[in-house]
Image (cartoon, rainbow, N blue to C red; front, top):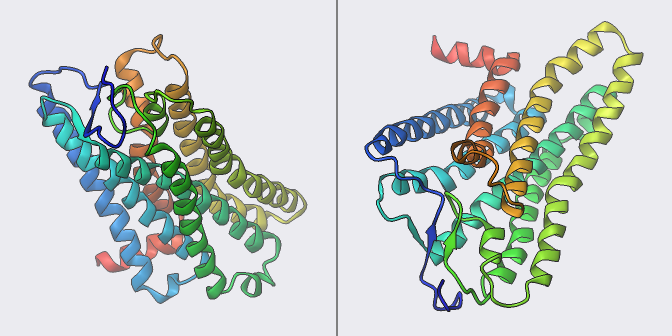
Length: 307
């Protein structure tokens, strides 16, 4: 262990990488392929939505924000993973480590906020179809998107500012990538304030977005049970991708929070590694596939462009 402070600590050691010999080239190819697929599918959907005026509707603009976030989160992880897989010494400079922490945590916060505002949009579209265009104007959509990103960035900047100046007594992080709470655990000083604000941040990141989501779906279910068959079909077709995306991302984030805060030595190493990357790999792949296949308007536009 190093007797140091974050002001003089120049690097961290990532202790979760296994010695896999020449298999590292195979893992490199898999991760590289996944990243290329994520970039292509998300970028293509962003281009399709931006270039087609028929898709300049609130739901698709929120989706565009979601796909941009998938690119943002993936870029914060994948290039770093590719370098580390081929490296024999798994170290990362302290400034880059904090930058990666910022990218991954703001990605998670933005993802939940995007899903929350999308659920509210579906609630207005299904429960108030006649007033929908009045409530959800283009200006309102732009304001919502800006607020989502601004809120996510400002909220985590406070967390990062509390942690970046902590005096650290070690530099080994038991993870494949930089993790905020694991850095805090290396601190020599009292971290009560950091832990309290960290838990408060988790509540803000997960529970606050979940409140409008639960509210929206309770109202949607009420309308579905009392409405006609056509209303139920519309609700199912537009809400299914959103629910799948929400449940998938929530599962990945919950495991990562538990992994960082509790002893997971009973879980096999390989499973622990896969699950720690789950929310950063599966979500950017799942969202474009789900929405690209389920949303008929996007699917038709895609087919038209490929002809």
